[in-house]
Image (cartoon, rainbow, N blue to C red):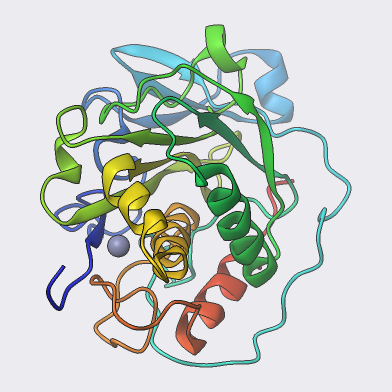
Length: 279
Ligand SMILES: [Zn+2]
């Protein structure tokens, strides 16, 4: 590929992500546009603890209660570097919105179309991002969920009553048009309210990799590092990092000679791993 490796983009986030408090889930992950939140003040139980509802396809669905947790599964990563970094979602006070660091970030793999070496590549990328963020990224099995743009955020029949786990899938540009051209992967998550309506966290992410692009890189001499850099970049989108203009960071929108996390990438991931836990 003359000069440029496959680029990669956040899941079409740009038009929506600067609208302030994000109760609209990131991008096209939402089920239709009718997403809203209100806090119920109706029944007795909700007097003790208010409960937020989200509207999905015209139906009010209770925001899933967080799993019981006793502190963080992994320690927070101290911020020891500084550099360009940006967040896809921020609270009104500018604080980053990330996954709840007191619960594991669950990943499900759709193995269809995975190129040779794909599993090892995913494992390495996940390990890198976990080490940099202090978030526990846990593989919880495989799925046949299609990597659709409009991914339902709650899928009781597939994943139970909670938010859907992060979907990791391999696909092609015929199935996922976002992968057209030099785009080798897309990643993002939804920003959702806490169960009591207070606070915002990420949930139900989606990471879709172009099997042909990544498989091609894996077959090339020296291509594995670049392939891993792409997966790490997309995983960082899933965890809440946005693009930066600094070509010295992995979160630059176009791949370059950089194949490991830069100082700003590390700073951003460490900060995303330090957001408040949902109680
Ligand atoms: Zn990107």
